[in-house]
Length: 136
Image (cartoon, rainbow, N blue to C red; front, side, top):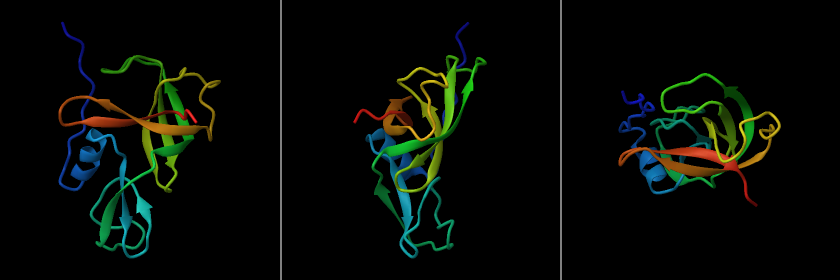
């Protein structure tokens, strides 16, 4: 019997630009044209001022580790242990993700450590933005 696959997000009209960007190797965020607030997750209005005048931009892909937990139980599509993290993007918003390319231990995962985005293609429609320790 095949092991169950990892759950896959589904793009919506409001999030399609984000998934298109990830597939192209870009982390895309939105910024309010009225108050200049950058935000995540994608939505058709600014969470700070409510304006519907928003634009999409390519983010730097740089972040710092804000918080995490190391999950040790098996979940379809994941090999434990793995880090479930919240990262603070250089542009201001925070996003939930996984940390990859480093040991999944408290010694290796230090709060405020510098991270960079990397991408994992799940299928033709969905590529996930993940984060790894910054190389520079």
